[in-house]
Length: 255
Image 1 (cartoon, helix red, strand yellow):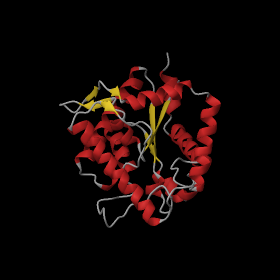
Image 2: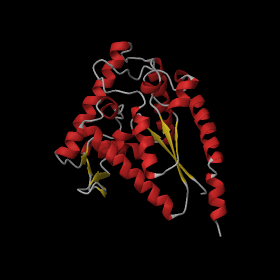
Image 3: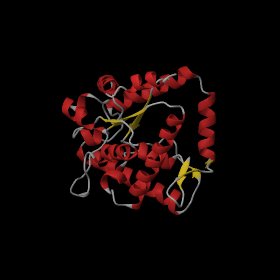
Image 4: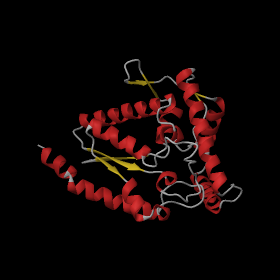
């Protein structure tokens, strides 16, 4: 390749890196590969998934998205949206205690991807600080990998609809209960990491907000972007690649 573009979803990627237990921070703050194992229930789930026909997987996922978009069986409304965020915060704090405080290296969950509530709602908490530090070290590792191949790296930072929109069913922050919350906190934190590490980055928060974020995500409790969101991000990413000459720089560096 002439360029590596990595998309980071601010909505839940801070959570994945702790939940998957692939890495932890060393005493010096550096990145350590972790010796993890799977909970037996996870092993069984993975085994079934690997043996399942691809068509069956596609049909199941499609039906799941349709029912999710329709909100079938899922509580809706302001209180339900607030409750989803509060449950996310509880899960993230619990996962930090399990992994970092207690040192549990068994992976208990792979499918649950809650909103990164600790980083956005309680930025000074131990859980939030650890996640941000771990994310920075993983991004440093990413850059080292591309630098070794003399490849430019561009990070695309995707906001959560919970932060960039005030009407998405996936969640709602109770700002009175969490006065430290800032809607831009997750994407800003990632952008600050990129600035410190001198990595080109595109923060999609402002352009998504200006465009009208409610039109850029799937409906219901599904917080993934839709085709319109992907198209807008692709156009903006292309503009950054051209403006910064990322591919040209790679081509000119060739012998």
